[in-house]
Length: 150
Image (cartoon, rainbow, N blue to C red; front, side, top):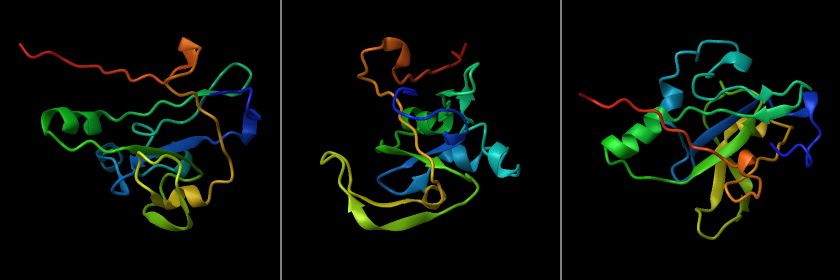
């Protein structure tokens, strides 16, 4: 998280949601998360981890588990699609909301016509580092853990 561009502490969103931007669907990891019955702040924490904070109480990073999504791409030859990332107040709220104003951020990506309904209630925001940031320690990371068969 780029703490130089946001006010830290309690103003930072506790949760974020990742979804299939092209088809407006949650990922398989959301559907199979065993913590779905918990209270909103602790629900879906296997898939959509809570904000990890530093010693000052400011947001440091979010950790998202997309194991089933990646596994489907590799093992089932699923079609890859762009992923969307939004802040959320309550990850238990399902469905998608049509936007009155269309968002055209990047011509290479699909036009954003709908967003997860749980983002509509979110009044907080954050700034995340991308994969091109100069500081390599702050770059977006994809870590893949696997087991080799005998």
